[in-house]
Amino acid sequence: MRVDVVTIFPDYLAALDLSLVGKARKAGLLDLRVHDLRDWTTDRHRTVDDTPFGGGAGMVMRPDVWGRALDDVLGSADDDAPGHLVVPTPSGEVFTQRHAEALAGEEHVVVACGRYEGIDARVVDRARAAGHRVSEFSIGDYVLNGGEVAALVMIEAFGRLLPGVVGNPHSLVEESHGAAGLLEYPVYTKPPAWEGLDVPDVLLSGHHARIERWRRDQALARTAARRPDMIAALDVAGLDKADLTV
Ligand code: 6GU
Image 1 (tube, helix red, strand yellow):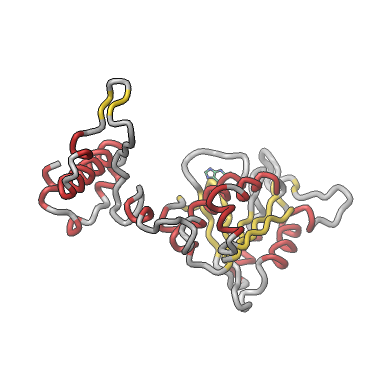
Image 2 (cartoon, protein in one colour; image 1 turned 180 degrees about the vertical axis):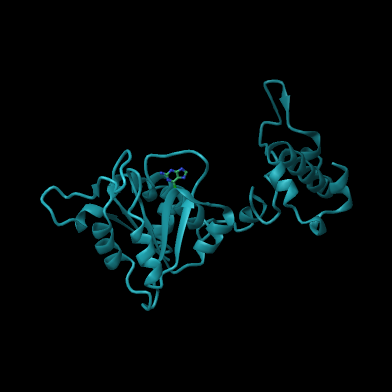
C-alpha cells in the first residue's frame, strides 16, 4: 500500500518511523512518503495561506498551492492506482474502525493535512469533480490545531490492519471495536497476587469455557457502563441466552 502525507510540518510525522508502522515500512508492506506543502509554493515567502473571503478570524490555506501538490501526489483518477484523498478536519465524518478497515484495503491513500482555519473548499470539490474518492474525517469531538495528529491516528489505525503487520491476526479479532461490537475484557498477567490485588480465580482455573463466558460477561458489562451507544447498536441475533442475563 502507498500512503502520501502532505503537510507544512513534515517533522510531525516522524513518529511513523517507529513501532508497528515503522516495521511495516521497513518490511515493504507500507510505502509511506511525507511531503512538505511549501515545496509547491511559487513565491519567495513560500506562502500557503491567506485571509478568508467574507471575513472572520484566522487564515485559510490557498487552493492553488494545494492544487499543484495534489496534481503531483494524487495523480489522475484514471491512473492504475488513483489516490483516495483523506482530509482530516473537525467538520468531517467521525473516523471509526470500519473506516480503518476500508482504508487498509486501498492501494493508494493521500492525506492532506490542513492548518489554520482549514483548506479552501474548492480543493476538495475539484478532486471529487476529477473523479477521485474523497473522505473528510474527524477523529473525535474536540479541536486540534491541524490535521497532522489526526493523520498519525488514522495511519496507525489502518496500517496495523495491513496483512502481515500485526504478528498474530487473532489479536485483531477480539480487540475493542472488533467484529464483536464490544469493548475488550480486562486482562491480567503474572504475578497472580500483587499488592493485595488478586487475578480473578476463573482465569487461573484452566476451565476454558468458563473463562470464555467470564470474558464475554466482562466485555458486555464494561460496554454497557461506558458505551451504551454500542450496546444499542448490537445485532440481537448475535447474542446468546447467557448474554441476556448480564
Ligand atoms: Cl481531523 N482535525 C482537527 N484540526 N481537529 C480535529 C480533528 C481533525 N478531529 C478532531 N478534532
